[in-house]
Image (tube, rainbow, N blue to C red; front, side, top):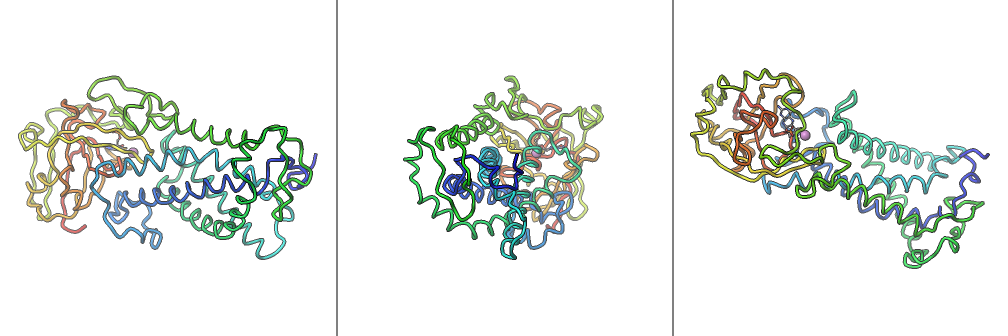
Length: 420
Ligand SMILES: Nc1nc2c(c(=O)[nH]1)N[C@H]1C(S)=C(S)[C@@H](COP(=O)(O)O)O[C@H]1N2
Ligand SMILES: [Mo]
């Protein structure tokens, strides 16, 4: 049997510039959308807040596109952004694999280097393929297994994204003319009408995608496109329910897609109360909310005292970076009212501390914009009843338009500051 480095070992008659370009043009639309939503997601994490929020203090130029504080409205902004990023990413997996299959002979080309220009092109392909597989793999693992590796998802996915962006831009610049030419070489409508029996290889091409010794077709181009498109749509259909409340039970591929019963507290939980090991007696009548102001003012409030303050009820989403989201009716005290209690009318930051000891999400910083937003709440209730322990009883943050991770549960201390 010939080795994969031998062009004669690649015999599918479907392989050729036209089919590769059909996959390419879909990716050319999809991947930039992945890049934009990905970069926006990173901006939503507000790396400028530093401290417990950001694990890429060396990002430098790579984060220089973030000249704004993340938005606080519309409240569904992060939900839409992240739902798009994750669902589209899942749907693109079959396309990426099909595209790689279609250019496989090139990936195995031998000798590996024949000229300087070709060496540079191959290097960009290596970075392109390596980074996209890394991004898809870490993305899927982040959804399915929460952080099952030795590095931070946030850091790894971010730096790999920049490798990908550079390699993708290079690849598009080099290949765009060939893609357009190949797309013009055949009619899509005609391909979709061609049966397997009539499927023959494309004419030999300068890039050597077409097999020098094509076998007989076992599937038509129409069949191949249907297989790839069908796989994408299936992944999408089995995942979309994780971001759309009424479709929840259809999200069979999503770890948090299962249905949760009909009670007011029956919706997704990433981290349960039992998992994080807070002593349950701490959430009882001895619980106090501590407020620290920018000039050293302090207030200590019992839950009953908080409940006598002006209550605001808002329908607001929790939208995790993992793509799942859910909208619920939260009731609580506006964050800016709490700031006012400790003299913080002009505050520009708040440091939130949970009763949870340790773990990446036990502390969190928020911006002045987030403190001032009408819909930023310290929530005490959800859907008309007290929060359950799993949802953060006695109190949790609910920040509009922000990533779910901003919604710290089991809040104990809020420290307001003047400097951002
Ligand atoms: N104290 C604490 N708050 C937390 C978390 C946590 O692990 N600990 N998880 C965060 C994350 S990642 C999300 S998406 C939201 C929603 O998670 P939940 O479903 O566990 O409430 O809560 C956030 N608040
Ligand atoms: Mo999350």
